[in-house]
Image 1: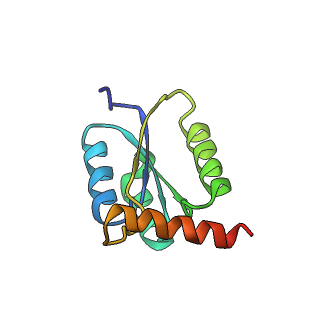
Image 2: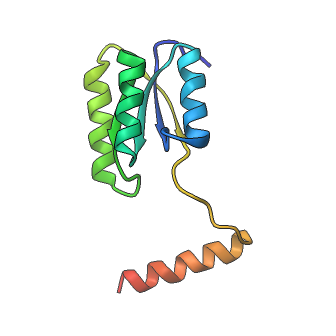
Image 3: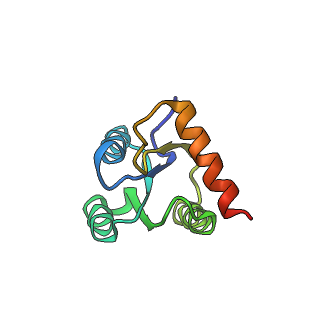
Length: 113
């Protein structure tokens, strides 16, 4: 996979696994658009890595915020192509998969009435 000079979107890129992924992509000369809610850390990352990181304050549950961030990345690096997306935002539930799915389904039914 070609990483050098391609755009990668990393959700949750300000800490933990997302930050580690972002750092590895930068080491391989990729361009990284970080989506995260931590604006202070995000701005610091963008400043530290200059033109190779674009921070977008966003909640990944917001389609509008994600679309806006993608648009901004493509405007920032117009000559580059998208290389991929790495989703690291959020915290997973600790339970059996079928329990989680049924709980999410019940919640969806409650909120869509």
